[in-house]
Amino acid sequence: MTILVTGATGAVGRTLISALVSAGAQVRAVSRKPREAELPDGVEVVGADLTVPSTLTADLFDGVDRMFVFPVDRGVAEVVAAATAAGVHRFVVMSSLAAAGEFPRDIGSASHTHHLAVEQAVTARTDDWTILRPGTFATNLLSWAWPIKAGMPVRVPYPHSAQAPIHEADIADAAAVALLRDGHEGQIYPLTGPQSLTRIDQVAAIGAAIGRDIPLEEITPAEFRADVARFIPEDIIAMLLHYWSDTVTEPDLVRPGVRDLTGRPGRTLEQWARDHRADFTAT
Image 1 (cartoon, helix red, strand yellow):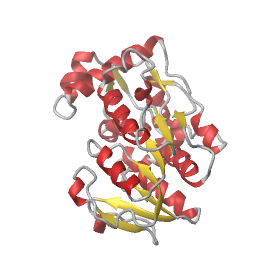
Image 2 (image 1 turned 60 degrees about the vertical axis):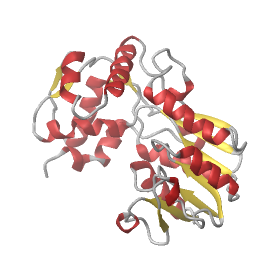
Image 3 (image 1 turned 180 degrees about the vertical axis):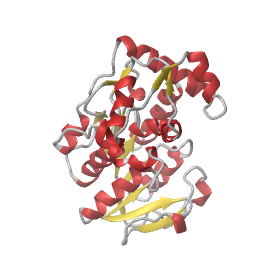
């Protein structure tokens, strides 16, 4: 049995591949730059760009039984169609909590629209799927790395809003279970970190992990927009501000998916920050 992993060189993909290899699985990884992939020994790396169907070679799916579907910007439907035609029968999809449309803020948002389309690209073609819906990624907090390393305040709107950031390794561990073990077909698992923390507490958790206090400065939504407009599309900025505004009065719920799949609670944000200490420190 060969497991095909897309998004192989991302934060989740790398960790997932390591978990699969440790479990003795045969892994084929897809990378746009296979020579730079730097994946574990024994992993077969295939060069392809999932957003460009013409790069999908005929042998990409040879011997593949199961596939991890990373939600690339476009082309997922074509990839899944090619995979099912080649005989791949089980798919584990990385989606987003926004796809559930539980809150008015999610409906029609960039994340809701995109991830729901990714899910439907799979569920329309097979019944043998498992969908993982992680909430806020802890890696989003790497946007604070530069001011923290520089000793400057972290500037945030809505500092009292509360999220449950998830460690990318917990997403990878959950995906590994869904790929390696039977019994998860047709299931949707919402995934979050183990604690809902205000943005004040999130900064404090990073400070505890690196051993120093980190100053925080509250800014207005307009100031945030001005800070990030050069780097983040407007629809994403609007989605983030709406999300943070909502979670002031209704903090993110802690979801059970990590425990349901792995049998243990997710890693804390402080553990995530310790794992990423080098990103937040100058030396």
